[in-house]
Amino acid sequence: MKILVVGGGGREHAIIKKIKENKKVTEVYALPGNGGIAADATCVNIGAKDIPAIVAFAKEKQIDFAVVAPDDPLVLGAVDALEAEGFACFGPRANAAIIEGSKVFSKNLMKKYGIPTATYEVFTELDAALKYLETAPIPTVVKADGLALGKGVIIAQTREEAMSAVRSMMEDRQFGESGSRVVIEEFLTGPEVSVLAFTDGNVVRPMVSSMDHKRALDNDEGLNTGGMGTVAPNPYYTAEIANECMKKIFLPTMHAMNAEGRTFRGCLYFGLMITPDGPKVIEYNCRFGDPETQVVLPLMESDLLDVMMATASGTLADADVRFSNGAACCVIIASKGYPVKYESGFPMELPADLGDRFIYVAGAKRDGERLLSAGGRVLGVTAIADTLDVAVQKAYDHAGKVQFENGYCRSDIGARALKALNK
Ligand code: AMP
Ligand code: GLY
Image 1: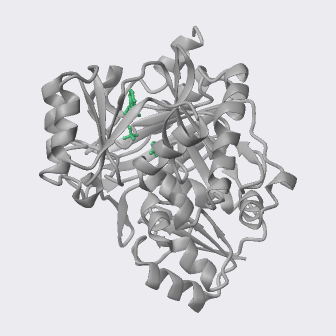
Image 2: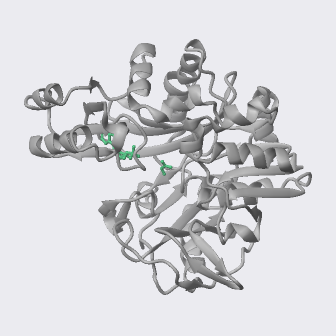
């Protein structure tokens, strides 16, 4: 089978390595992929948002199945365009990807269907938003409606900070059209859990839970990033909470999308907060998380491609979706200076995968035989083991074998989870 994967980061590298475990796969094309992914797939220089070129390429190669991984092409309708030409795809259509593409949509959906989330107000006028903030409870959370490269959420500790966030979104259009509407919501507290779930509109099959580490520096200090590391499973996500989430969040979300005529088929990502009042939705994503995927898929015992094809065809109920009882840790190696200002083009030498230790390349270019860093987050080094403490040790041990002088990583990925486990 010829498989096309749209995207080119660490998440896509993890998806590609897992898909290749299926013996029927003869060829994987990554659009655009990257210099590291090139070791595992044929990378083709077509941008993930260039939908006409993606469809033309699928036709030219007569691919058998497509996986659209990033948010942008999903929200822009890449799956709709591929399906219109008869290609089977993993990923939601645009009318379902809106669950990530518009925070106003997702908040209104949760309100309408009684799905637990932070209370909120929506504003389309700057003056009304500023007036509301004069008396709103502080801290508060300001969110741009649309996609904003993961930067459209401001946790404001003061009224002034909240007002300046609203101004930069609505007046200065820091995120362009994404800021034409803003959501101002209640500040919630509690540990955060990421749960990725396969769903075809008939059933929801959650994957193993995980924990992201978003801040750039140890002890959750420094700026917000795309994610500096992950562990799975997340110790705060107990069996009891998992049951509660299935009943109050996962199934109601699937039914709500069906009722709206927006059946979601693909990977639905639940960003949850375990508050003193129970689990609540912080955000939905319409795709696999990055770097959550880099710990979740290595723990998957069943065949990813089979599960993706079952999801696409609406037969997920019959699919074998299994995860090991072990643990995984992924340490991200980023370019020094990320997420603000950094340089690319540094040579890298990577240790080989070992069966329980994997390197996922997020940002790299090839220069003949050499691999050069390219981008902010550059590598994800994952290890799996029976227990989390060993997985963390192995991941750092393998990361230590990477040669990349311009790289840095956090030294405490997994520390919070281990503390919760009393280790
Ligand atoms: P996002 O950029 O959408 O991934 O959100 C960034 C982070 O903001 C989340 O991971 C949470 O830590 C935090 N966050 C978002 N909404 C809330 C909220 N209502 N209360 C507290 N923290 C929040
Ligand atoms: N790791 C968070 C995300 O993928 O949005």
